[in-house]
Image (cartoon, rainbow over all chains, first blue to last red; front, side):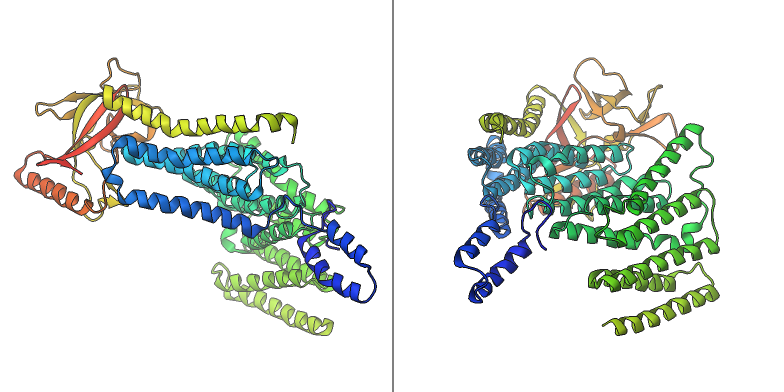
Length: 433
Length: 190
């Protein structure tokens, strides 16, 4: 009803409650004492500041610091080296002092902690950059990013600063991109994620706590989605990038299946849109050009790659089988089934499966998924999911137009089939509305 | 919050702050040590791209040393760091003595990371090296003038067939290298 799984009222519920309470009182359904009691129960946590205050603190701190730096920059060349080095360190020293002041209170004031976290993280980068400039030190971007990230993460934990933690996520995937051609890109990035993961659970709150915890999933999911891309640059063939991303988005859907918060909702939409785009991949003829990934390699490599393949099947399979977990989102089972089918097709293409017939099957799989999504959305009167299914259908039609691997005959037949489907759906929608 | 956290959080934070400060401080200490204890060398500049020698607030550097291939060590491994010993030619400018994977004796050598060396395409027994100094920070208002002076000198020397009098003064100590200043025909370029 708007109460999250942890028992904490969602923000929307509190807003609606604030609107209806006076009306209920006016109608005599609620006494003043009852209204006050309800307001107290649904009140905002006193340690939970408004987002606006936090953002103002962060931007204010950054602008003040940036302004001071610009003033110094105007006279930079006149300062001797020791003075320049001192100026490089001052913002960092100030952030440490402010952090100590913030930590005197338990838990730290959220607004202060977020502002100090932002300043602390940026001060680390500033100090390193200015010293490098003073001494004309050569640039080493990956090393700079990694040092910055690892130096700021402990501060994020101590201050419990979401801002500094989000900056860490940005630095982590930036580092992964900077070293994307190196063999240690993927394990390194996963290592950084493992280091940062406990932060989400470190505050002792349930995952569904509004804003403070659930909102962290949004930057985390976005950051990991981008970071995965960096790590997959060296993958043998792009079809495997498709399978990895499907497994990733399926994992996101599984983890957030029982959460009703706005943050979880946004994250789920990111995952669904991502999966929607990815399941279109095997509908292209170029997906089915041979790229033997499991041939011409040693037995050990074959075992490892086979294990990776099986591992990628786990999440889609879990989405399909975990009906209890996905009971509130039945469409997720369809997405899981589609992801499973596409991953199997990826494996097939690596084993030499090719040809137009397979691509047609892939098109039918996606069309079926879209149709199922639309049908369930109509049944449950869910406009969001209806739009998603409709978009998937539309995307399927549009990409077919640009797909040059099929003959005009095949394209023509597919277009006609889909077009008839659109018309039928139109009629059903009109009848339903 | 646990009692432990309450009691020690601030101290842990201060320790962390010291650790964060130690990062740029260690860079300063390292560079200052090289400046004070290092041996001086002059690295002649190579002509740079006239279209875009400046990126942001710094001048991209290339040295003549990087154009001359040197013999590769017999056990050369591109994935391992190398050490390049430095010598002086008859005009007092730096040349590369030899490149090895073992740390040489003395202090007049620079450490080259795995990406700083590569075998030449025409002779697999020779290496090209990249000096780990690639930028010189300048005041943006002075930058056009510095560029003009450096470009003019490089062009003049090319036409005369003589080495250019634009070079970097560098301090080297036990593998570390620090650029102290750029010199033009009439003095420091800054």
